[in-house]
Image (cartoon, rainbow, N blue to C red):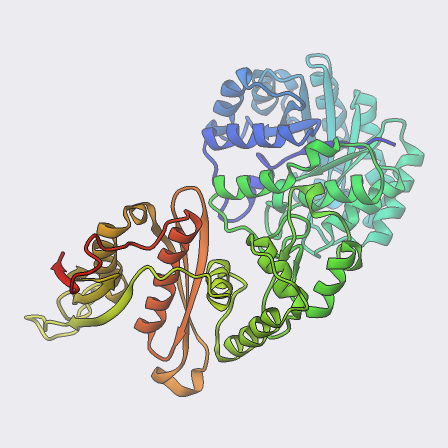
Length: 551
């Protein structure tokens, strides 16, 4: 059995809070979704806003390989004919071969929202579908509020489907518009609709009861052959049915033909790219494609995964473009250390004394606040140091950080959140390091202590290791670990750094936030040098006394 996939990310998905896409954004997302092999991409509602009209005009030359574009709109307004209805005319101006029309299938909605009789509502549906069917290749009908309408008055909800079918609709899509239907009643309604209608049935669910994916799969099991949804579940209120979860469930769990395996392997890339374009933070625990979806932490689990991944993984991560991650913590076993080291390109024997020492030390470090789950670079350096393989690029000789506040001329409280009644703080870091037999020192100003330290360290190390010019700090997080000690609490600093081709994480822990930041900063720079295979700097005058220089 095959199922048609209909993506509505560019229309229904944009109704989600915080989702705002430009025409250029929508064009990029359309091509990403097309790469998944979906059958239809709903580009928007051209009768509702100029942006969607502009999208359809721009999309006429869009090189889609798999999907056909569809436009969305409502039935005609009561009291006017189809030729005069601006919404229907906007749909035709979109110049796409497929139009999806929605209409009311709940008696209550017809009388309360449209303020027309139930009979007139049915006339609008049949009349509008028939009008469009004469002018385009295919018309689909979205039966809005179908399941609420069916629960209230089954005969009327089904009569709305019959009206659309008489008008020539090729698919009847049952919509759980309010998102509150449970799988049992939904399945019964789908089966009843299939028994009463000749046209095939589709499903469109919302996630207000966190059942959108479950309801969609239940509808398919009941006989629905079109699935509507959005990438990452974007949509109004709690969102729409998440195609990122539905696609692998259909293909890998239910054996249903909808997209090819090579297209499904692009799933994680598409999900993350759509998040990026939409300026949304990826959901780490998102099923199938999240960063944590195949992350293993418990030692027993990791040991079993090492023997056969099916012990704790329900699918092969690569089937959806994801990958396995081995986490390290005080719950880890030797297998965690071995597999995590292998992931980072280091070979360890799980039964060796060295691996046991590393594991014991990891647990000690985790106990005092270190966390290597997001700091793989620090872990790699730690393993190399434990094996005596970490290069010594420089030595800290002295570091002093000073912060000076100047009182404002006006001592009264300020409403300016940036001034807080004082001049901006002046921060300076004075740094002295040793590189082989040379000593270098400098001072640098910064917007804060971390910026000042970073500026000073880079200005010195850049003379010896020019590769570090490529490194940039991209994220900085601080977490208080022992809040009961107030301002004397232990803090953990997590840094993310990048050289333009890779992003890596490092960690530092201390009761002093400056020291914790310094630890993570040094690891970040050392990691760059190690991964590039840079040898430690050697003075050109090895037999002479150490030289001093000022940058």
